[in-house]
Amino acid sequence: MNAPAPRSIDVALGLRSYAVRIGPGLLSDSTAWRAAIRGRHVLVISNTTVAPLYLDTVAKGLEGLHWASFLIDDGEAHKTFDNVGRALAALAKLGATRDACIIALGGGVVGDLAGFTAACWMRGIDFIQLPTTLLAMVDSSVGGKTGVNLPAGKNLVGAFHQPRGVFADIGTLATLPEREFRAGLAEVVKGAAIGDADFFAWLEAHADALAAREPAVVTEAIARKVAYKAGVVARDETEQGERALLNLGHTFGHALETAGRYTSLLHGEAVAVGMVLAAQLSQQLGMAALDDTLRLQRLLDTLGLPTDIPEGMDPQQLLALMRLDKKNTAGTLRLILWRGIGRAEIVAGVNEADVLAVLQAAV
Ligand SMILES: NC(=O)c1ccc[n+]([C@@H]2O[C@H](COP(=O)([O-])OP(=O)(O)OC[C@H]3O[C@@H](n4cnc5c(N)ncnc54)[C@H](O)[C@@H]3O)[C@@H](O)[C@H]2O)c1
Ligand SMILES: O=C(O)C(=O)C[C@@H](O)[C@H](O)[C@H](O)COP(=O)(O)O
Ligand SMILES: [Zn+2]
Image 1 (cartoon, rainbow, N blue to C red):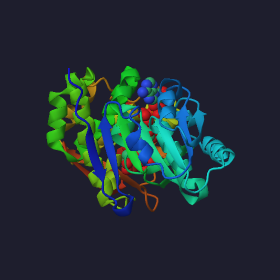
Image 2 (image 1 turned 45 degrees about the horizontal axis):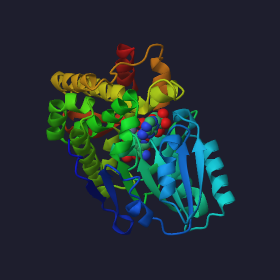
Image 3 (image 1 turned 90 degrees about the vertical axis):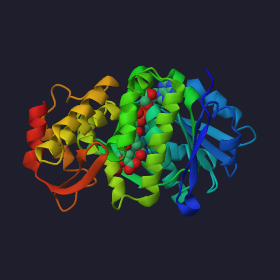
Image 4 (image 1 turned 180 degrees about the vertical axis):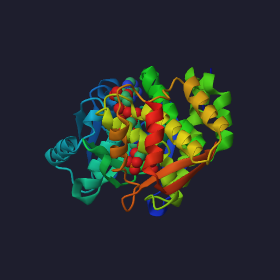
């Protein structure tokens, strides 16, 4: 089978615009990403799973530069402030000046942490995203949200800091475990559920091909989701309005992740469950129809994603965690609710009793 044609999608942000390139061989063909490095110092941030697979390939593209690597342990539980401190120490040891560049090699955990480290060092240096998970390719590497978790909540510390470029080598998906691949599909479904009913229907029609990882279909899905997200980010970089829609399922999802101490559900899985809960709440409030909720559930199911809250979770604790969500204002819940396939809405002042009722019915 022919390799899918490479794609390039622009994130239009004036002087800080950049391209998201998607295709095979982008790690080993270093010409493009190397050109995005302006200075002499480079810190590659990765983790103990990804580095043994791909760091040597990246290293070949760094010849002649003064570079080092900093590896974190694997998993969401390591997207911490402590690790940012260690990464900053690695930059100091490297002697990194303001024209230094950080390369994020890995999934969303590495990307978020590396981006935040780049935002902090000397008040902001360049970084490049080399995403190696489906989730990072379709979502976390694009748009400049960077940050880390606290025990009190997901992504509570962070900064908006855009990368200089994103280079998604789809060849790296060959080594990605099945569960992680499926978790990435949740963020693809999310984009379609929020703002693109045609894309949602396309996902339904191609669900089996996606689950089977057919390269052309996977590439098309990545490109469509990235194009959708790039448009939203270009219109509302710092989430003053529309961008909050990208949080569909996340207020519930982040609470599930935090309650599970970042080791129970993967982020994409938590978003899948969270979208179903948001749909059920929307239905309860008379905003969405049962048929649409069932369609969403069916698609997530076909893609092998969970749609139920894991056993043992406490609705009151989940609600308490939701109160610390960054979208909330003036002590009231502000959620992304759903009007049906392709239509989401920001709703302020959501009644806690309604949220609790949905959580209690779901456990
Ligand atoms: N900044 C954003 O806009 C944004 C968007 C969505 C998600 N996120 C964040 O992204 C994180 C989730 O990202 P994720 O799903 O990529 O998780 P992850 O970074 O933990 O990666 C998933 C797993 O896959 C492994 N892995 C990565 N690439 C691999 C490869 N090619 N082959 C084999 N194994 C590989 C990793 O070591 C890890 O075990 C969460 O912290 C979430 O909050 C951020
Ligand atoms: O890019 C965005 O904006 C998103 O909300 C994308 C989400 O998928 C992602 O999980 C993001 O990190 C959540 O952001 P947060 O502001 O809720 O922490
Ligand atoms: Zn997300």
